[in-house]
Image 1 (cartoon, rainbow, N blue to C red):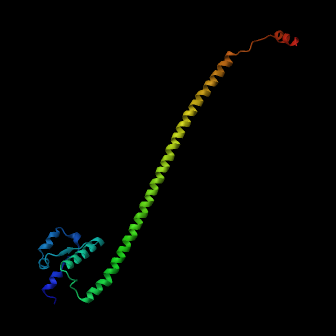
Image 2: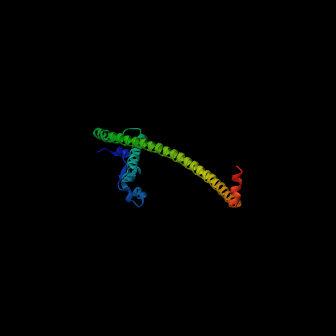
Image 3: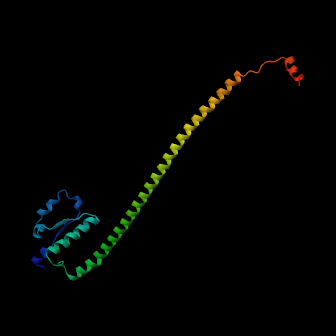
Length: 172
């Protein structure tokens, strides 16, 4: 139907690539040999589909022409692939923005954590200083009480008899 020239625009597509034990076995396939060893093993991922489209575009660039397909197929390709590609790019952009927002939030959280850690360190230092001052004051206070206790023991009022107390009062 298309002739031998169509083989220059042909690539064999294998599906379920994740199940292949030895992907180089594809080179032994007769159909792959007829197509100039152009084949692709498709796996179920967006990146893998993008790679397939890049290879098809590369193949057509090497042939310096357009896809070797009928006009109706080209129209369908534009109708389905281009919206899919735009949706994929939009989703990728949304994910990139979300990633940037998360990075910004993470950085802000790290800055808050550092500030809180600095506050905590300052509080620890203040507490340590206050404990030292309290210990000094307690030691000083204990020393004062000890001194007062000793003074009260040392100070014993003289014992006077009743006559001794009355005599000085009479002089007044």
